Image: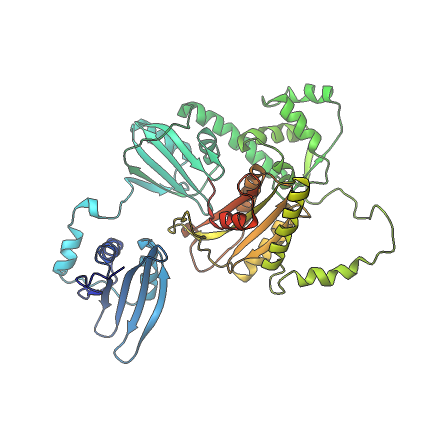
Length: 490
């Protein structure tokens, strides 16, 4: 393809007296897109100049930003980042130039023209913004309703993002990691922190919220009470539910009739699955119900004194059969399959495990799944054809990941490295729906880990790619390609 020689390769803008505002970054990014050129923006004072450049990187599907420093004696590159998030670049620029103060003198014509441009060209700001630390989520939703507002409410917590769409004050659609519609709104009621913004915009979407706000608020309040009670009682994915006493089905039915109204067959099924040897992460994989459905069931079982949560398994550590096998000889093999610096299985071990599972599928028809996961910048939208760009975990975070996941995964699930900054878990004998629940457990597990010092928590998000044989694909090559396209759980 021939280059259009009529377009400039570089555009130099007038020097500013201080760091550029976010809206100007948005403008120069658009200029780089429209012109196909590298846009260069100098700023600073007489003693020192910083030069910010931006160019469109079509091969990566994003913009490349670079910051250079020139003090008159030497110059060099400060940093380089590929992103389309101007807010993030503004943070980096501000942190890189703490000594600069925007001049109090009369602004330049360029700055005047930029600040007075039409609102449609500016970065969109929410018409209502704040933090859930200062307002209860129920009061926030009621304000949407009373104002008969139409648009999108976005709430960003440290590890998740909720989106609720309103039409004349009525919630019509909602999404949250692993939940949609009524379920998503119900779970949001348990949030106590998170920055929110409401955007006035047209809404045209298939309705997933089927109940009115008042009914949802009442159910949400009960859900929060039950969840708080369970958390106080020790509920976590790592906890082991243990039967306090064994009762017959007839006696169990009588006891549970005094509790919260829940499907009796489901309550019986969950109670019968509890044996003290499986933690809640393992048990919840086999329960195809929503969180707002199993929370009241566990509440009934705990409040009626039927179960408790322990930190350790009730199973005996003694071997079932005594023999003279020296099991220590496998330690050398096991050690060779792990990275010495992290303790996680290598990518080669991942491929070997997938190969063995594929042989089992061919021979016995046993399904298996692969989950590739990690953290990405929220501004980097997942591309449908390419692998996600993950950010690195700090060393301590990798150790925390290994320890926490080892307590929630099955003994034969394999946690491995996947590429430079991503991780993967091989799930033998696992259907796709169960693999998705595993991904949600991984997201909750990682939420308690201090992943990185490089980016603020509100700028990163957990993403996971899920692939299953035979539900999604029929070859290992397809499985790896599908799983690498990690995206936010919704």
